[in-house]
Length: 391
Image 1 (tube, rainbow, N blue to C red):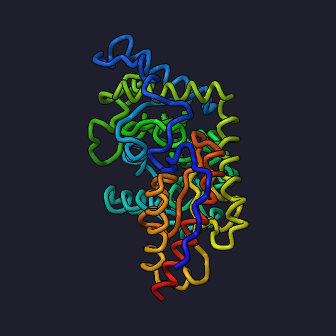
Image 2 (image 1 turned 90 degrees about the vertical axis):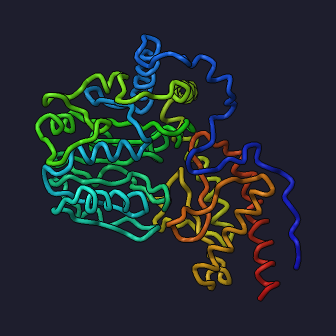
């Protein structure tokens, strides 16, 4: 078996996980020195930090005035569940999914909430459903960026401005890397550990005035757990959106999020973050187009994610293997790259087709991705040689 020589250059930071994602360049534990540890989050210093995180989020994401921003429990999952359990049921629902997390929201609405007037619009990995068939006079739940498929909506043009229903958007791998059209979105959720590389367990929930109106005029038929309750006496609990969190947040994680937000602000805000992610995707895509053995899982170029870049191994001999064989081939490549310390956690998501998934969000340096690309060739060539040796 012929062994291919290793590339000479290695990524300075081999962390390409799709969540938790790479910390910002230059990050160290010293960034957390100002965290008010051992203090109550209800004390003045704690409230000040939480309010700072909310206002910096508004500034950098360009969230419109009148939209509420809250820090909620249980990461993006908690934020999405909070929205669905609190808002859905007032009218029919269109669920739109093209990857595993969107499919999970369908399961929750149909099997947990047990709502009956639900229409499902689904597509295979790599594609989008026909969005023209979605009825926005109904409530609509969708992901902006499919983290496990690498497929995103190109923009919000498919959502009418005069819709009667609410749009609930899981934007966890899009926020801070893609331009979210807030005028078309009534609920936006994300988590800190994605594009800004924050720590886990906390979610962000952004509500439009239309979503607030629904909360104050509609009461679900089912009981709501305490951590889901956003109203009291038929009125929004405004404190939730001023840093008075429902449960106790980690002030260490809050400090880390503030540090990432200040880093983003120093770069130039949202435009700079989107530019970094776009440049990172371009570095990967240029390699993919020349490789001959890789392809983007996302079929349509305009829908390809600039954060969670999902790749298929299309070499004819590998593609001829059954699904288990393809998965084993990709897993062997991923393992070899991890052993060399040049790429961690870049295997495809467990429910996705076999292949690679490389995080290209704003905290990743383009130079590290460019250094990684020759290593992909190295891992592929050696695994292909091993495959031939046992054939």
